[in-house]
Length: 187
Image (cartoon, rainbow, N blue to C red; front, side, top):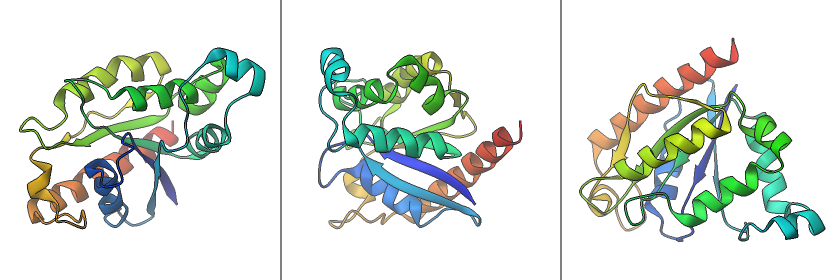
């Protein structure tokens, strides 16, 4: 079984990005599963707190899940044309100390996706993530792009995908990323 962790970078209860991951969980190819997670419970990073108290339980649990997974799918909102601060903060926690950065992210296949009410989707946020992924030593997947624009028209009030074209694109996107993650695990 190929396991992918889907991490939503939004704290909103009605997040389009979390909804995108929940929809993705039901569209995974045979022999693969998507474990949807959020960044809830992760406090602002403070090296003094980490030194005195260690990583919070939410961070430790997520580190172990990502480290054990075959791949990581980041569903990123876009705030002010870039990465949301709360999402970057979570990744900062997950990548400390340095040994954990290698254990959690080193060589990990990673895909980027995102949904936004804007007409541009999350193109700038996804682009901004590339330098972070490079610094973490991940293996980003560039086989397809998933940037959901006008998200309010793509999901219903219960945050289910209503656009069949988006649903099919998501299915194909997931199949491509899972295949990439499987190939990377054979290296």
